[in-house]
Length: 153
Image (cartoon, rainbow, N blue to C red; front, side, top):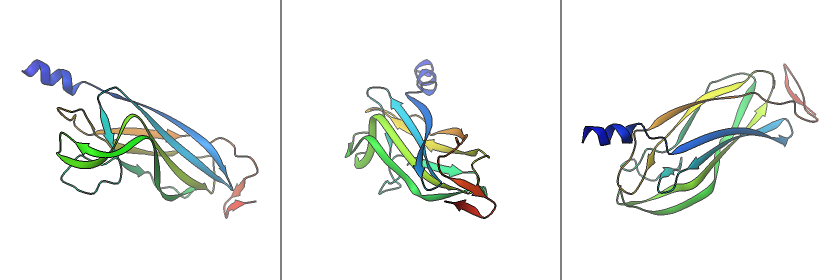
């Protein structure tokens, strides 16, 4: 039994990639894309009960060079369904999870850093929540001149 649990503990059924997209107006979208193996799921940021899975959450290192605009938007293969492990209705992703956080830049030169936490489950078990560090180097944005007083257009 110990060998099976150790094998499960070492699994990583989600591969994450990171990208940016110029959103205009000195704003940029930070895009977190998870590719999820068949049979596994990860969960929304917006879960209705704390009795179920661990919700995905984002923590950004504070900096005076940017402001977050709202919470990350969710897209991908997302659905609100009955989860067999937790015996409750939850919002979860299968195959692909995309979280898009819009930020307004005051100075694009420093990186935007932080980490996010997520949990994955299949229909029999869940793996412990994982923390993933991220760091975005913001490319030069078209038509955006920034300075100490913030965005100028």
